[in-house]
Image (cartoon, rainbow, N blue to C red; front, top):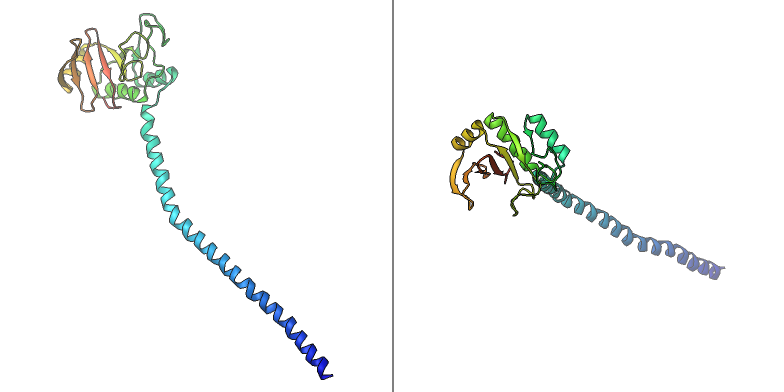
Length: 202
């Protein structure tokens, strides 16, 4: 009787010990999971401001790049028309691949903005006679690459250029050059002003 009880006690102890062992086994896992969750939370808190700063930086890059982007013929025409700027060509056309046309296809947004700024600052009537069409000199800062616009040489515009900008000498072809504070250069080509827009200022 006592032997059975003894065996029963031994068996009971074995049964009661098993759950205790199982509980002890689960505790480290629970602790590890809790630690992992806490670590992940800390990492997220640390990374949040870094990611936010990265987004802001990338946004700044995109905004900065905007003015340099090329525009379409219709977009440029719409902006020039709204600003009261006219354009003309001997061929009465806008085809970029025809030299007698005046095309804005591929013109940089900075050049569009520069022309509008010039119109507002000078108060002069502006008529564009040259854009991105073929037939102009090549180069990095060229008509073809969207950096240049030609304007009819009017008394008002010529007076503005001479009084508002600084004479910086002659170009290799003899054209007198005037530079604005913005860095843009105005070259007098006789019957028109050849303007290189490095920035959106006038």
